[in-house]
Each structure stands twice: as structure tokens, then as C-alpha cells.
Length: 85
Image (spheres, rainbow, N blue to C red):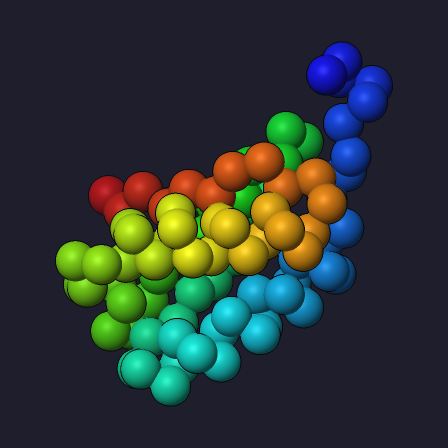
């Protein structure tokens, strides 16, 4: 796909979809925060609360959150965790 054919990510739709996902995470004592979304559709998220230290959070991000965002938010190509330094 050429650069000119990329679908820009609708940030309002992205946030609305994350708010729905966030409800499930918050029920388990966790949370997710949108750090950034670049022009290539790569969404960077930070897991917080109980999710931050959970060994399954990387699986949840790649197999759960990424799948949902790619299905419901046009233009999202990938989801990656924020790097904690």
C-alpha cells in the first residue's frame, strides 16, 4: 500500500474504543493509557495498575487489545507497549 493510500486513524474513535476496553481492565484493577498513535497506524499504549505487572499483559495487548482496535478502528496497523525506562 502506498503512503498516499494509508487510512488515517480517527483519534476520537480510537479513544472511544479504548474506553470500552478500559472498563474490563479496570474491573480487574488495571488500566490502559494511549501514549501515541503515529502516521503509520502504530498505537503505543501503557498498561497501568494491576495490568502493569501482570505477566499476561503483553499477551492481552497483542492478542486482545490489538485485535479489537484493528477490527474496530480503521487505520490501526499495530499496537505496542510503551517502553518504561
